[in-house]
Length: 282
Image: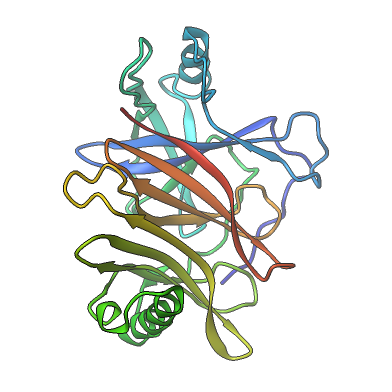
């Protein structure tokens, strides 16, 4: 199922990775720019935001609009790491040139039958692999719930409170070649003073599941939600073309949203955040 097509020996200078947002129309939202420049293919590329985090200029927006969002531009679309086909940019929806709220999306047209979750401005450099993503089975949900509950109890939460938590957005997929299925989801626990949201990934190690990614977000402003961070798994894709998928997550905040890219590090035997930023909002 994981068979990867032959990878190229060089990559373009900039590979843009987008999240596909679903509404009345399909739109793409830039997550990260994978920058190769003049480096050789085997060099680990840098990950950068689509716009400077500070001192943005009109030229920065123009570059994004003319290089990525020119009507008629083709983008590859993916789901579960599998390339579904190509979509076409219809028009730019960029907002925020003069300050205030920022939106960096563009409308796309995609006639395919499957639902795309990620996109890229490459034609063949990210070949993809067969998708193994599906909804988690009840037994898989139960496994992830038990691991998440124990993690939060070890973290210091009261056991009776943790028992009231709930699992959300649980999927089952293969993230790494030869490892088997991973269970990805979030476990939410609400107390009188805070909401604890634990994004978790469980993978098998010597025949038993263990947590290989844990990311805890704590919201203490229950009235207005000014410190809210609802993170969830978007999808997976080998964005740096090293033969292993990265995990892309989104997070909804008080008046904005953001993305993160997670990479598995064999030395630490777990996932670490490789990039955080982008998104939009006020």
